[in-house]
Amino acid sequence: MGVIVYEDPQGGVTEWPTDDERLRYDESTGHWLVKTGDGTVRRIPRERVFYVEQDS
Image (cartoon, rainbow, N blue to C red; front, side):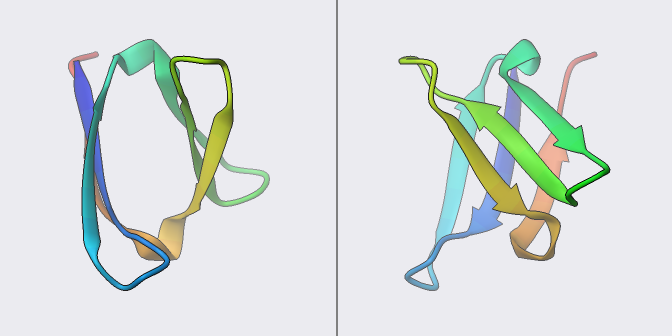
């Protein structure tokens, strides 16, 4: 299980626990990608991310 902690668009801090396989970094765009339960992919710019933890 992993977690990504980032600044949300409203200026708050969001801590999003997720499975490791649903969380990855895309070097070509500079975004963290998080796949939701319904298959939607949320893109979070690296500048807004405080930290990411993954088991693997």
